Length: 115
Image 1: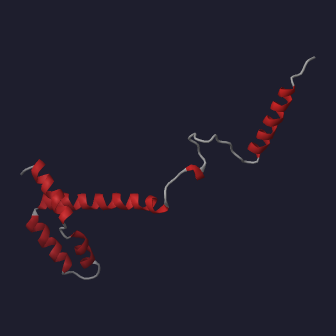
Image 2 (image 1 turned 135 degrees about the vertical axis):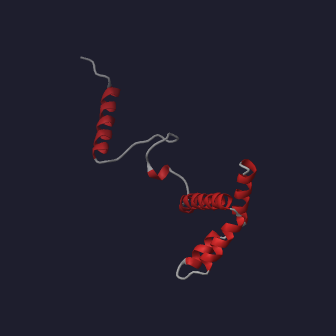
Image 3 (image 1 turned 45 degrees about the vertical axis):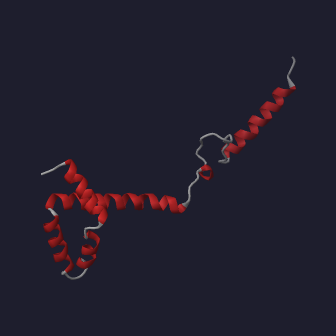
């Protein structure tokens, strides 16, 4: 019976790979999409900044919707009443004051949905 010497080399390599897989090692070709964590790029700052920017955008959007819905005078009177409170109320008033981004969102809603 004739045996190809390359076949023995192949089975030796396959055996070595199977042993490595049994130990938990993985093999990924360069340039392919894989599950290896070290191939994922991105700084920790960017990973933290994305949710913060999203929360900021949602907060400004919500403030703009409230400003549009209740009106400018009512909104300002409620914020000033909150500022006169005690405890964390002044902090809430500082967060809810009508900043330029809130006024812009409210203005855009007024332009799209006039009363």
